[in-house]
Amino acid sequence: MGKTTALIVDDSSVMRKIVERSLRQAGIELEKVVEASNGAEALAALQNNVVDLILCDINMPVMDGLEFVRQAAAMESAKGIPIVMITTEGSESHVVQALTAGARGYIRKPFTPDQVKEHVLPVLGKKQ
Amino acid sequence: MNTDTSLVTRSHEENWLPILELAAEEVFEIMVGCRVKVAGQSEHKPNEEFTAMVGLAGALCGILTVGCDAKTAGEVAQRMLGDTVGSQEQVADALGEICNMIAGNFKNKLAGTDGRCMLSVPTVISGGEYSFHSLAEGSCMETVVLFEGAPIAVRLQLEN
Image: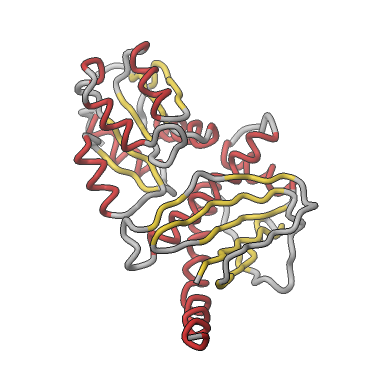
């Protein structure tokens, strides 16, 4: 697999930059990073961009991350794109809801670059 | 009834303050790359020119705040970004995320709140000339951590 285009969805611009940096630290070569500050923006971004990976927060205004995952799962253009949640919501029920909706991974904030590597590389089909 | 309430309140403060302090220490260490030292609340009082707030609802109802002076907030943001901070909005954004992560880390460490405690998105107030009043009766836990010697207040107000 070559370079990766990632969609990073978080209402915090600081957190989007930290997630991007963590992806690079995990050894993922990024072709392009598309940013969205909520689920609705992320759905719009999926209409206009071809992405290989989505990293998504849960608690966001306008449309939260769980609703985004549900709607993205129903979109033809988003089929097969791995979604990894990165969120402060650490309860088992949130994990189950996210995975049931279609997410492939779940990372709790605060997170280390190693945790990003551990959860993201497998969904991209890469060895750690 | 009042006695029961005060016992519950005291129990919260005694049992949960170390959890709150641990939650704050972990967030600073992992996300800011800096070990903070718990200083207690009596000796160090930060000038809270930036105050970030996250609401809790459900099994826990209340508000968690993180407050510090503008210089400290700027340094926290710079350490998080690993780069120069471009604007006051970025400083507020960074402190809001710190508050959000401390709130999330705290509730994730408590047994029995699984999925029944929700967090609001963060709000950040800048400017120190305000006073904070909660209309709900309840308990308040507060600690101060030292970030490179500068005090940062972490406060959790819970409704009974």
